[in-house]
Length: 412
Image 1 (cartoon, one colour):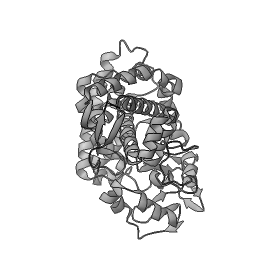
Image 2: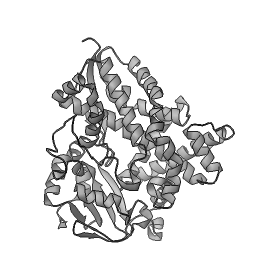
Image 3: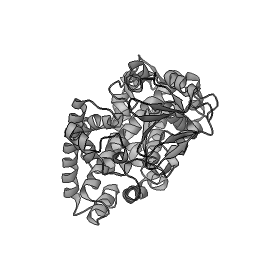
Image 4: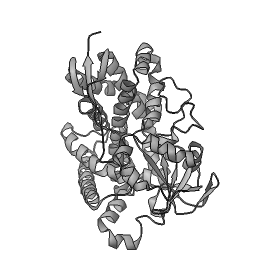
């Protein structure tokens, strides 16, 4: 392990240049070694591919932050930071924050609906939503891809899955924007207060939403959740918090995938032309979007027991952050890692994580992205940048675009 006290990790993670383009800084640190200990926060940062696979798949590592020795879950912090404590305590009971056996019990409720075969049946619904949005976009001219297409499309898909009325779009977007900052790990008092308020409002809406459909749950995803709750598989807080997380992560993951992916194509016109010439490259292209410009900077794990990683012992109770932008461009795993290649194969990126906590919604995100790009390219033979895109600078972890101005044309 390289001891690097000169790296001010949290200043770097908040720096505008890093948020716009993290890769040069990550490569400089990665060149010093794959695992680094930050003495200030006592967090281990992992930038090596092999090392992060070890962490993500080891039984000694988990996701329950209550195990974190220097984390939020203690009496001292409950009195010192009551809002932050309540926020994390009320956001805790969900599969992404749980270790076995609770993790597998909760994940089992959703697993059948997110298997590839079940997700494939959603393609007509996803296509319908994509077509509606495309119909509202200009035939020729300029538009912002994020607000016109990339942001609303995944939210509409999730609304359909969970039978939520369209008028809730604005509220869900507002709640999600506040709660997504929990993934930043360090939050300001104002962000904690906003997130806690959003969580209370979100859960209140979902509690009423579930109650209204309890008598006729149906056979869809929402019906499965209702039956799991009524059958005692999930308690009320687990039911509500998992739904909150599904709606936030399921939305943001695909928004960033579509936006970041389109920017990759626009900045690599040779690869864009290659994809247009060979539509069979769409699936590997989506994987390359995920690898090359992932929609998150960090993946968190907490040591349940001591674990040796590449000669470094991660002590029990330690937090570990995988820096996914470095991991996905590790030269030891990916040839020519800074080159964007829509045909890259194999492409074992770790944007969705690995091990038991691998993203449950990955098949849905992939299908949405494939339909989104297939539809955009079919409608618009010409797409090019119409200005400088703006990255979201208000988030340390979730990495996506605020705006992506494009010029489009439906004529060949």
